[in-house]
Image 1 (tube, rainbow, N blue to C red):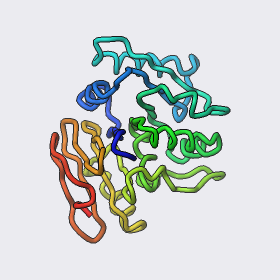
Image 2 (cartoon, rainbow, N blue to C red):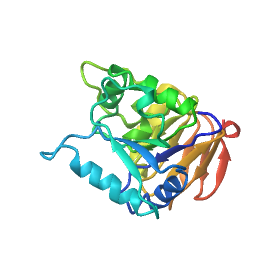
Image 3 (cartoon, rainbow, N blue to C red):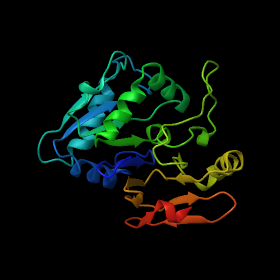
Length: 233
């Protein structure tokens, strides 16, 4: 990530839960152009039509002018020139983090995305779309498919990984990850989110975000508070 772009990570709640983060995201769009990628979700009998209706209604509520939202359901044969005019890429949730990363790798979309970010574009990840932005995607304890078990994520926040849908009941999964990887973890509840820019994390939402440091401290960051990522480590 460079100083020009922003990384928006959502805890994966419903539209009412993420409305503060969504409003902040829409306000950051200079040209109101978004690429939406819902490929990690299972298709309904209507294809991805419901996904497009959802993203359009959710984000348009915070824009006085129409948003231009393009949806990709096939990542094959794409190039950076196809998205160079976009302000941001929005990666939706998925049934499984591993299958989403496999799709990104097999289609070489990862290279396109990283070129987009290096050029100053921003990224919004919701739920699984947020998890894959971290160092590792094994935070949630998901079972990888038999043909893909690599747990490396996009690594956009250094050595930090992301855990979404945070609750006290899921703390055992967090502790297992910390014991295994011995690397820090940002844990986000469904009613909150965070924006990362210039190595600074700002909480946008209704609940605190917790940062777990292996064999050390646990840092709780309240809504609207900011924290320098390097100083947390």
